[in-house]
Image 1: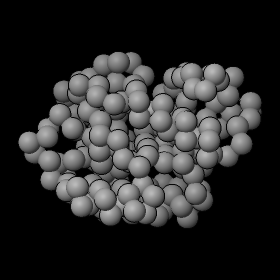
Image 2 (image 1 turned 60 degrees about the horizontal axis):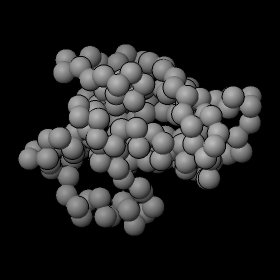
Image 3 (image 1 turned 180 degrees about the horizontal axis):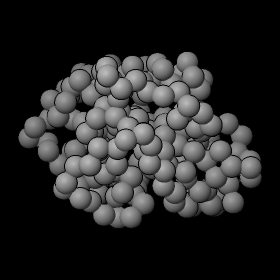
Image 4 (image 1 turned 90 degrees about the horizontal axis):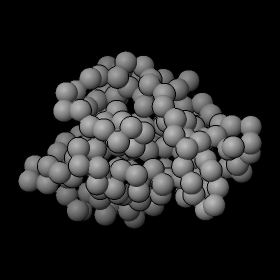
Length: 174
């Protein structure tokens, strides 16, 4: 079986752990728990008639006091950048993380997840913000870890991008 490492990156409390739990275990907890360091999960998905084991690295949130540890990125084949639709600053952090990832890993496949779509009435990221990044080649998917909206689809879309655009897959793992 082919195994590939993907990393979830973003600000604190954007929903990285909740998205991972929803995808891997099909559950959601209202109570927030800060990730310290990294939490690793795995799930086998079927994509394009292949089985791929996703090694999901849920990496602690980033802010000015907690820079991203480059060692967590090593070996990553793809990235999910998670943004909280109710916090415009989380989009700016995602932009910074994308630049950092490019420097460390080169141009790996990535998706930006606009999480917390269930809080639509509190949305503070504008369509113009999103369109500006789409012009730079960003692909966005709106998700809700709480309701499960588009969560499985987002992970599958990233896997498709990995198969089409990513580094050559081998049976040696990440």
